[in-house]
Image: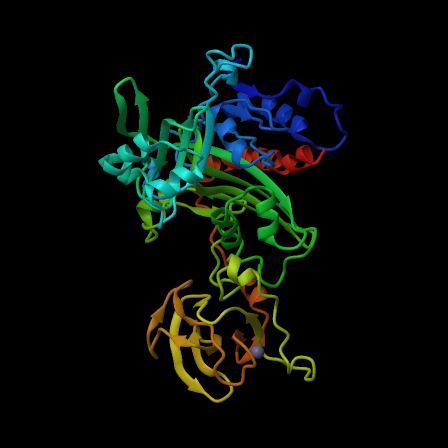
Length: 495
Ligand SMILES: [Zn+2]
């Protein structure tokens, strides 16, 4: 059978089989599913510092605690269109994980042959905007005037060493440069550039090539101990993925208010790699979030019919529950996008809240200037100063629904203007009766304040169209398997 390829360490498999759901249980599950589902599954394990392929070797040197490189890639031959990549990458990128056989480091001479030994040292660093060739080489442990001179005058090197580029070098034992490589990618295409500078018999030469990024899928999971970002950091999940997860569930969970210690999440997301090195995170394909014991699940699905027949032409897809309900609600649960910045602010206790029974609103602590967004489509009913509210915006969403955004440092909209859900309408401030920068937010239904989260959850969502429901359901089955696999990763790595 050709559907399953695993590169893993024998010792991992030989551990006692625990009774709980672990990675191995999941692998078995996946294996039995794959024929039926036309899954093509590749798995890379990078555990205990062991090295299984070139990318893992590279990655492990930077993320020694990275234990969760369980990567599956689904070749959805029969379920086309359901796999997502960010932006224009999608059309160009074959969704395929390239696995290379293990390459031993012993290709370089060992201590047995001291006469010929050329110890090669590898280092990687990121260029800084104020770097010179000399400061960069010094950080990389290279002491080589000839190389420095070449890098200064080579036109390709100038591109490859711009600020923010990751640069890897191989240095000889005497700190001379043997090879320098830099890879980078613009955000807008499915390709990356590779600069190689190589020592040769006649001095250095440089080469600049273009190659395709490879999209692979990564599974990860975590448990909230202190904050979402602390948990995603522990699981080596990029911030871009953490904020996507928060946005996906933004109609169901207010990440500013509702996270609890012990909440769990699993996520399946794309990562775009250049020569096996992850260069950026792609789209979240599916996610699960267990908040206060309630499980929320989401899956990205591109509805081929929607593109042609409805006004949603800008969206190639959307997130749905695995039962086929759109997660796009009429209202977001929070007027602040969840980010590392806003997550660091505890919910502010309104001074009046403790003394009065009624505090008609929710206060979000956030730094002055944090963007404020309209939670739903509507028309600006008021934008300006009011006594206690300071700079305040009222958005009317319907005859009965109005939202209020107060204490703003700035308003970006005018009375009568139409706004869309998620549109930036102003910024957090401390105007009016505010003891510090925060957003006072109200959701008024027929003039009475309601919990925005309750309103958001009750707002209608659109089910997947019946024409693609069968296709959707097939993909949902695969997604359940993938999410279960993702959830098992933490268990496996925690052993
Ligand atoms: Zn308030």
